[in-house]
Length: 149
Image (cartoon, rainbow, N blue to C red):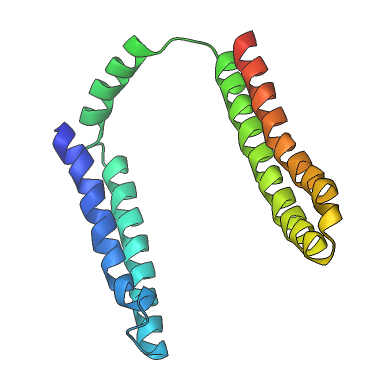
């Protein structure tokens, strides 16, 4: 039953994605692409409705009872620990995103300043390093959060 629970969603994802392959490869016209996108959307809605009806029908309670019993045996921790891990992940992810935005803005400006005057290399490199420092600070904060859990 576990193999069916793993393979069935994978088969459904492949089945839903098939109409879009030629659209992404630009092998169809605009009207055909619209038809394929509408087919994709209708197949997605159909799968969602079937899954909803399947779970409402009670057929999935057989799977859910076994999975719930196994999950509660292995589950330890509290809500505060879970929120702590989420906050650590957000601190790392958002700081890395901010560092990427900062470097994306600072690096081209640094290259432009260096190309006009070679003496600006050290000053420009500092601004790029400051952008990278944001990611390091976020990583340090997430390490501190995890250590306090």
